[in-house]
Length: 218
Length: 256
Ligand SMILES: Nc1ncnc2c1ncn2[C@@H]1O[C@H](COP(=O)(O)OP(=O)(O)OP(=O)(O)O)[C@@H](O)[C@H]1O
Ligand SMILES: [Mg+2]
Image (tube, rainbow over all chains, first blue to last red; front, side, top):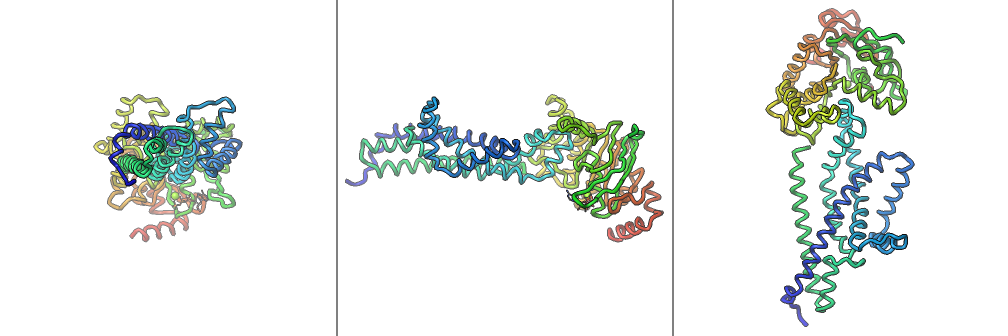
């Protein structure tokens, strides 16, 4: 049988619901990974040794093992110790923490790269070290790290397809379900790819706007 | 040790970075309202001395007293942090490279610390920002970011930021050295204005004319010691030490 794209509109509602889930999960996980990334960076740099060292080990494990495995662990594994999360929550947490670790690496480097004079100027005004970090150093580090974090967030969007394996009906799983009914993998995988790409463009657009807004504050 | 008699007392200040002794037993008194200039060749320890006054570079020996309180007194870590933060609020510092906060407007640069540390309301903070930025002639740029200002304008905002904490004294570390020559005067004018208001100031500078015109007293430092000090008309015109004469000769020739 040949290709027939006219079949698409009939299943568009299922696909669009998948798009909504993909966007929802990506945005939630992105926020979690951003806030978590700041938090992790501060812990990795400034927590007492006894916390910092084990924490860095955990970060290393997060970066060095497959995200898919982490998702299985959070969704299927945690049930055994009585934590039964809805699949989409497990997906958001898994994606969010995984990318928080990557963001944390970026933010740590950026914090260390902020001119030493900034901390000094804040301290001479009478700010404590933690006040100076919070008001002066970290905001600048975050500003500097927006472009690479944006790249991470696009990777996050693509990896959000992985949560289909724990049964979240996001875009990839929705496409698979429609294919199960129609036996038209080419049309619907192409459609899903196109939709991912459009979401991707949207994210790049948001990123460019943010970058333009902060360019004056350098 | 004895109670201080002077507004600022530096007693036998000693500072080493590792094995390198950068300040060697420096003592200095400054009275309220006095303006003291520090000159000397590069690496002589001027910045280190200035930065020791608010403990940015803590001394390895000696004492610093400000208005009856010892700045670098021995306290347990947590108490020391509290104490030093309170002391630093009383000492304004201006850096060669401005160190303005680039992610904040001039207004925010000026108001951040007073809001955070003194709990100023937004409207009081705004009033304060207007007042301080007006004083340095930067009121019309109040909502500009540092990246939108010239070097001289940045430095004037940095001075306003320091003044907004209502410090008891101001420290200037080569406030005009990073500026294009045509921008030096606008910053010097602000400092002269502070001098007229009898702000206590310690000014590290390479500008001999400026030091001569505003300072009550000038110190010449070399290799971690104060070689000679005195009123500018004597130190510049009739120094008693050969090292001072040599420095001035070089420096004044170098400037030409
Ligand atoms: N953090 C530091 N670690 C090691 N050595 C330092 C440090 N800060 C300053 N020094 C050394 O201390 C000496 C005095 O430096 P300082 O900056 O006080 O000199 P300065 O008189 O201000 O010189 P300049 O006119 O160049 O600013 C120099 O030899 C410098 O290399
Ligand atoms: Mg210096």
